[in-house]
Length: 158
Image (cartoon, rainbow, N blue to C red; front, side):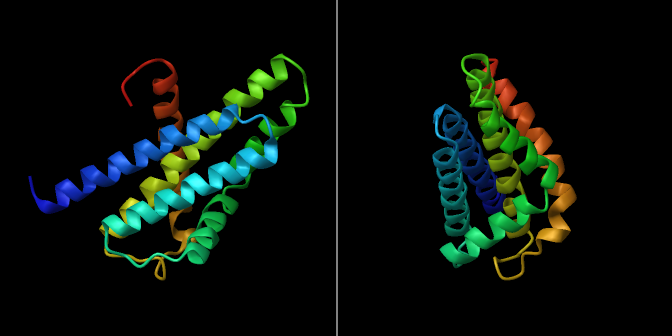
């Protein structure tokens, strides 16, 4: 195994571990608190990946890039907001919201992680990151992230 293979494997483990952490955000019953927790998880993941790739990390830059990547995915952000609104419906709505927030949180964390792994593997840094260039790749990885999350809920090994 080469050093690069080892680094990629470690990066993929980091992404999957943070994806699992993001799944837990769905059980937080407060919409603003769950969003803050998800943002913190994703920011910490970026920090962990930056450390792995020996890239200087800036919390401010990380927050800006997360917002840019997620902001470029308006339909994804919109579906997350609908999950938050569903919490207002007692019983069924709350359960549906928990599942949708977990799905969105896990899948978006997975997608963001994969985008940054690819970027860092190609020699990129936070300063050279262009959110517009990764929009399609993020959408593809978001879909793969949904499959990972569903597999996790179904008891398949993530």
